[in-house]
Image (cartoon, rainbow, N blue to C red; front, side):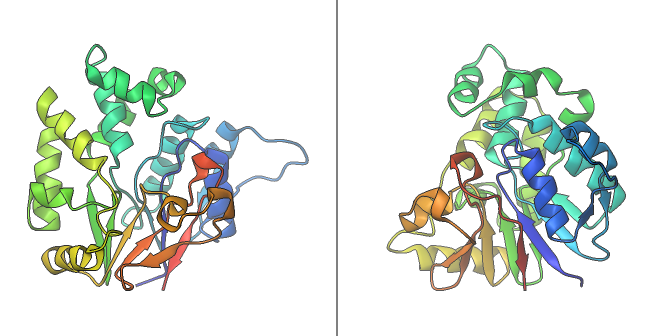
Length: 263
């Protein structure tokens, strides 16, 4: 297996994602310019150069930031260039974006608004984007790492294996039925299940069921877990007696967008 990289909670910061992937040696800019280059141009010329490395994006690609559609286009392009090596998981904001589109007159609309929904992202969603978002799995596992968006045990309400959970939620999203879709969004918003007094036991229980040695998640920004401003965060945080790794630097909150290499 090649090198393994993870990133989460891009929240529309396409230029930051592009630059971080270039710095990690996973993407080549594909162009040389003496002046400013538009995000659209950078995305269209981005080339995967990561060899046999794997990249996992742990959800929340859109909302809050300036160019969620650019993020979708970049990740989809890289995935097409390196199938089986570039992966994306569904976060709560993917479920929210789809819910806002499908049920615009429902409570999804208010939830989308108060959670940083961007109208320009919704307006630019194509059928290709929507189909891709609908197909995203919730969980992944690579070697010793169990990969997920939310630091939550809510995943276990949909099954007791990665395959069952991904299949169950895939059917709920594909059904276009409001209650099931809302349930996915609502459960994925839960957080901090591994950081409480019994967090180590909770994390170990989840790993015993789903496999792996370390949970890797985004969703809850690192600053909220360690009691620091996001601007002071400079790397991922391992907690729960080494069983859980948080990688969301809180980009939308003034922190860094972290592309983390897992050794």
